[in-house]
Each structure stands twice: as C-alpha cells, then as structure tokens.
Length: 238
Image 1 (cartoon, rainbow, N blue to C red):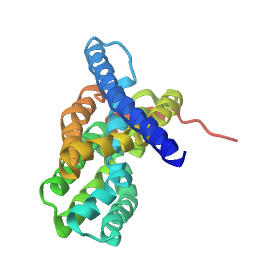
Image 2 (image 1 turned 30 degrees about the horizontal axis):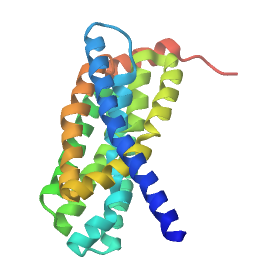
Image 3 (image 1 turned 180 degrees about the vertical axis):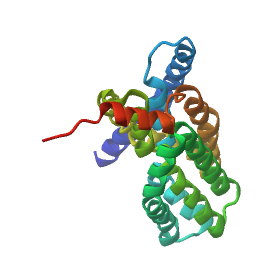
C-alpha cells in the first residue's frame, strides 16, 4: 500500500511540474502579445509583470542546490552562503539604488539589473568553480536590487504617480507565483539538461525577454519625471 501511495504522489508531482512548464510557454505567448500591444500604445501591465515573473528565476536554488552539491562536491555552506552574500549586498546598496533610480530613472536601472542577472547566471553556469560561483551570486545581488520589486515599484510610481498603487498590487500578486512555477521547472530542466545549462536558460530569459521588456515599456520611468510627479502629487497630511 505504501509503495502504491508513493507512486501516486510521485505521478501527481510530475504532472504538476509538467503543467508548470507548459504554463511558462503560455505566459511567454501572453508576453509576446502584450509587447505588440505596447507598440500600438494599448495600455497593459502584463509586460512588466512577466519581466518580474521571469527575473526572480534565480530563486531556483532551492530546487537545484542538491544537484549542484552532487555534481561539484561543494558544501551547503558555500552554496547557500553565496546566496546570503547576494542578499547582503542587495541590502547594502539599497539606498544607492534608490538614489540612482531617482537620478537616471527606473528604465536604465532595471535594464542594468537584467544584464547583471544574465551575467551572474551565465558566470555560474559556464564556469562552475567556487570563486566564480560566489562572483556570480554577487552579480545576482546587484540584480536583486536593480531589477526586482523595489526598482519595479519605483518605476511604476515614476510613470503613473499615485495611481501606481493598484499596479503595484497586481505586480506583487503576479510575481509571487514565480517560485511556484520555477521550482518544478528548474527541477525538470536540471533532470533533462543539468543544473549548469538550466542556469544558462535563465540567463537567456533575462537577456532576451526581461531586458527588451524594460527597454520597451519603461520609457516614462525617468528621473526627472519622478521629480515632476512628486511635486504634482505630494500633499501635506495633518
């Protein structure tokens, strides 16, 4: 009975993983459609939402850590310590990141974040060595600050001012599904092509999906626009 139960649970898990992978392709199709509508000046938030959804793919470490440890022999201290270093770096540069967004605008900062994410993932995937592993995660630490929620929220505020509240809520809800989808996707990609090539796939997503999105849809997310919005919308609270 126990064996039958385990086989049943395994089949359910495999089915969920495959469904998540197919769902990813459907979302890419939605992204393509939304990108076209942006060029036609049809308002849509799907593009930035999809960029955030894909950018947080580097939270795949929970799914790939065992594969990395088995293939390289690295300790869990190194594997997760590098991730902790990325989080620490992201926190240390948070104020500078915010000032940079105010100065040059969210568009340039988030494009730089996409490049950092692609570079970090590529470095780890192409050169599996402890030194390059740590260096790659530090690049991902920059991407965490420049291309995820904080930068996206600031960019939305630069574009629509006080009306950004609803857009930020939608963006948060959509981005929260990233780990749900990318954990099983990362697992099955690693089974098929290995963890290193999986990271290269994610690097390509950041370079060829997220970077063009930030370039196309964040034209109005500029530093001087933010200053204008603050002057227009700020009111005293008694």
